[in-house]
Length: 309
Image (cartoon, rainbow, N blue to C red; front, side, top):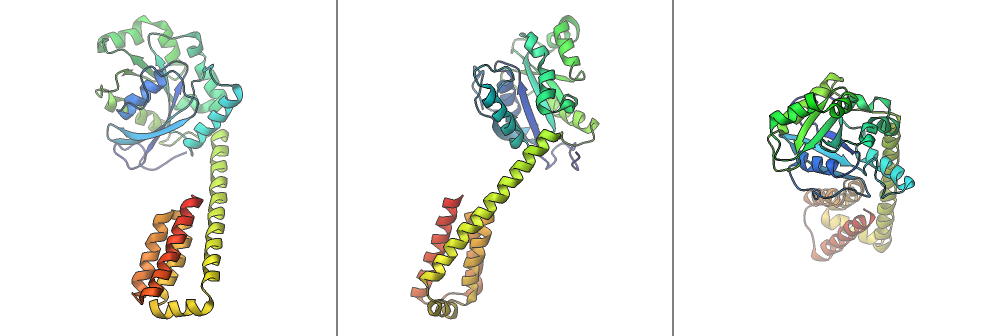
């Protein structure tokens, strides 16, 4: 699926990157390298829950999703399926690129089969949106890296061919930023060659539908809670007192409180306070007792919304 201005460097559109690991620490080292910070320790080899992090790569806003390694033996089959669904939900409506990380010095038979398992879990076309990322140690020179990948190591060449020949090498030391722009350009070029959009499949569409359904449920729940709070306020202040408040303050502040409650259910406490203030500005100021009463009501609404969230 397409998004406008996707391939423009520095675009306001955030690149969604799903980092895949076969085994070991490579995918976590890659995330550190992309974000330019120590998000994971260098000896980490497994995580039990999918995670999302944001940052910048060569000036481009990126969102990076990590999940358990494909061959992680420390989690159950059921847990693995749960985390697969979670990682998809974290990356909806779909990733712009899959970055598949390996240690270039430790290519295993399992690594060679990673593309097959990716197709099963994310969709048959996901490999077209994928790139191999090879981790290397600091002491290797650029010429050594190129020779190793393209000339001397047939395992690496065979692995890279499974992903359309697309690859990039990155330093295990995340402080080395010398290859950031090259990596970003490779990702953007791959995305542009596929129409400038993000990857989507039936599994990602199901994840997006599930998230939207849950958002709708939460909105209804919040609206219901706000309605209960408002009803309590109405019962607390009899009709005569509300009429007196409206006369003293002007209808603006009362309406502002109502608007604050409604918009707060969608936008959080900030929206509630904002519209309460707007109402106050419209209605003007008034007598002390009535003012304290309204402020108490608004405070109650804000606290209730915080609890709902």
